[in-house]
Amino acid sequence: MTAINIGVLAVQGDFHAHIKMLQTIAEVNAQEVRTETDLAGVDALVLPGGESTTIIKLLSRSYLDKEIVKRAQSGMPIYGTCAGLILLAKEVSERPDQPTLQLMDICAARNAFGRQIDSFETDLTVSASGDVIPVRGLFIRAPFVASHDSSVQVLATYRDRVVAVQQGRLLATAFHPELTGDNAIHKYFASIVRGSIERPK
Ligand code: GLN
Image (tube, rainbow, N blue to C red):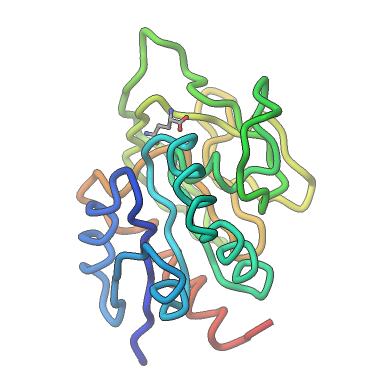
């Protein structure tokens, strides 16, 4: 198996945790992405949790937003967690002015689980290409997917709310697997990346 390079957007948020998690997977090189040159060197990108409004501001300042969109349009896989899910969304509910990368046909509702339970953990199952992956879902001021196009696959729900989705090579979770000891979701993303290299668009 040849090694694949997975970049983690490292402008704000919990990118270190993703790097550490990816480093536990065989034949995966994880690297921080801050510039267009960094982006050119990776096969795929992870958008970490953090503050979606800050991340998008920093991205547009450096024009990295446009480069990420171009790469995604030519088939680069992207995995967004929490703020990363919001960045992937075409729409943000109740905040139509919030800029995003507009790559996935989903509408994200921010901070959607209420103040009193800003953070919580729960057991979930994620259906990924026929496999059922049990995960510990860690939600931190998390969004959910309020609505989505029919081409978007729902991989997990929590109390009837959609919290993990996939559309082609784009994967998004409202929760943070990178903050648990379990690399199953990152492994699943690595399998999407391998598939994209074997079958380029
Ligand atoms: N609430 C944050 C936002 O709207 C996301 C929180 C997170 O990434 N843990 O961007």
